[in-house]
Amino acid sequence: MTFDQLGEYFAGLPEAIMSDVPDIVAETAIEYYKGAFDKKAFDGNPWQEAKKPRTNGSLMVDSGSLVNSITAPLISRQKVVISAGNDKVPYAKAHNEGFTGPVNVSQFTDKNGKNVKAHTRAMDLPQRQFLGKSDELAVILYERLEAYLKTIL
Image (cartoon, rainbow, N blue to C red; front, side):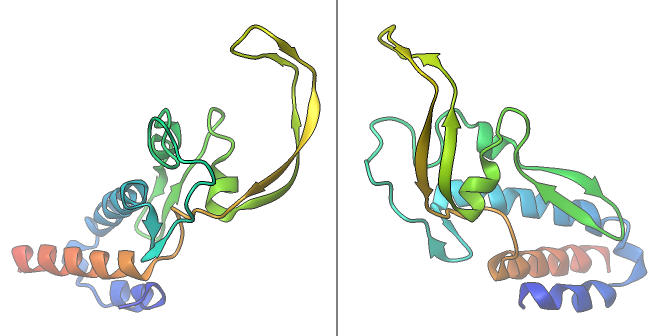
């Protein structure tokens, strides 16, 4: 089962379970996408290692804000949307897709109390995808829905 084959699979499901399918899909997808942070991989592809190993936390997990921003803002019979990021996590897209380019840094005071002037910084953030089309997720969805179908019928 591939991600692209899911549409045909959903179309063939009995009407008796269709009211439950969107919630099962949303719950399963969120669980899978959040699990990418534990596996440090997406759809079987490991993330690029950090240039500097972390002394605390884990790769891509410091406060947990990014992983906790993964939600399902839309769950309907026609569509389930899973998204990541919010006002506190504007960097979600850059991590998921990668980013190369300049970033404006506002003036701030560092941890030693020194004032740092506003400046531009060159950024080269490798893609560490955690959200998107996944054949692994398609298989998990298929297996979970088949198991649910067996309990109903």
